[in-house]
Length: 330
Image (cartoon, rainbow, N blue to C red; front, side, top):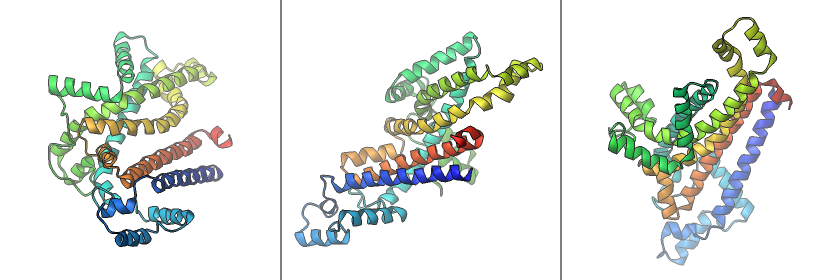
């Protein structure tokens, strides 16, 4: 087991190094001069040369890369061309909002996916309507779901808000509104934050929920044909008991792997949805950074999302190895 985990961690480090190297090359060969972007177009040659030397841009490429890696290890993601302050300081205000949205979306996606898979074992018409709703929603682009959600649930029905994370101003120490409201004992603020979170989280969850549901349904049907399931049925267990005690756990391994793969799609959808719902996360920050050609900010967001995707999939691989010993042997 330790060798299995060590191999996964080694591959994780290699992939992260490749990702950082690609981002370093993109930043190095970007048509935008970082020195001139920081000092402005009117800076004189002496000031430009001094800052270039201070930033180590005259060093050999491999030296610059090692300095870049050292900076990343110390939390140095560069200086934003727009705000003229460290990117890491900017991200502290935006990352929690995106993480909160992404985690909520993934929880909803898994719940909807499991329900979708279980409903395939029944021919009930109401359950068929639920499957039809998921199929229809997953067929629409994320931005269209966001627009339709605003029109239906905000403008027409008035059930859900169309923008922001909360009706209240300010934030707590963690910047995760749900956690901060719990810590502060602010029950009203907690439910208000959930009220704002439902619609954008649902928009990014529907597509992945269908993928998860289809794979889980296929795994459930194949697991039902195993001998131990027929043995359990012969012992007099009901269908729900067989599914609950034996089938779901053994059918969950492919779903775990798929959940890790869907993380990327989930956060890609979150970047789009944040602009629709004015959600103050990485999506809004990225939009402003692209408009201003703020490459350090763009590179930092890419690194965070890429590293997060890699870490989640590594964790899923290790978890699958714990659940299914056959994967460790493979």
